[in-house]
Length: 345
Image (cartoon, rainbow, N blue to C red; front, side):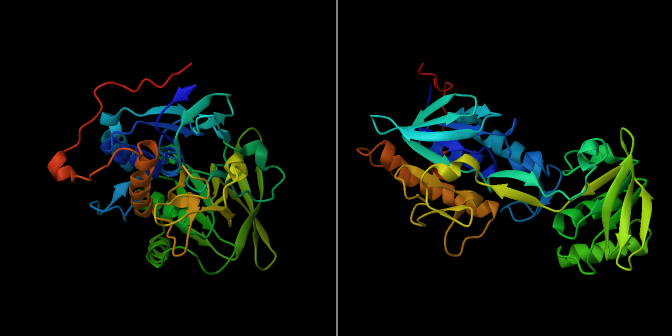
């Protein structure tokens, strides 16, 4: 059994910042995440993608933001259960929550903070029969390491921000032998500035753009050799490719948390904006996993939610203590001298 004061479900940016705010309150944290490394989507899906709306950073790479958060929380000695998924929750005789993971590990805490982002993710895959054969052998749903695609002839499918961002990234950095973007419609859904950049690169010959077209088949032996493209006029063509990136987005799912008795609305957890508490006392939901009127799915909003939730959580953990907030500019950041002793059995 792992005992802690704040059990955080999700080690993405909001979950990590929760550790910092908890540390200022002298509350110890343990994090559970199904991914093998901290960072959530920022580590797993787009570590090299720039983020522009983090206060104090005109631009910061997603992976760099996670590294900074890990450095920020290091004084508070958080502990982790990584590569494990939170499965079930129950209360013991003392009113503490027992969360058990898919590996059978039990975690005990008086407060649970659900910071699971949008939940677990599955890429939206096109209905192509031969697709599984080439997954990770020429077909890739994420760009974890852009340098992997250096000197390759790549085809990207999609019309949203992810497809446009990566197509323009590869073109701007002259990384690939060729870049072709295929989209089944005439108009793109991505940011207007990125669409303009895309067409600028097309004019300079750095990107080939095929609209009103879609990839309908993949060919090759052990690895991908080509994609078959169907055009609006009914014709089809075959295009050589070392790599195809169908970037059609992700399908988020709450997973087992959806069965915890929490109030759910449109695949998100309803909360009270007073303190981002759920309908179960002692369980909070922060970040993209929650919903309320006016909700914005931004990392900086999750940081704010975590801060207020922890003020409320402190009163649950220490109902007899009165906490007086002190600014870090006055009080500094006083970390924990020794790592938390979390094993109880």
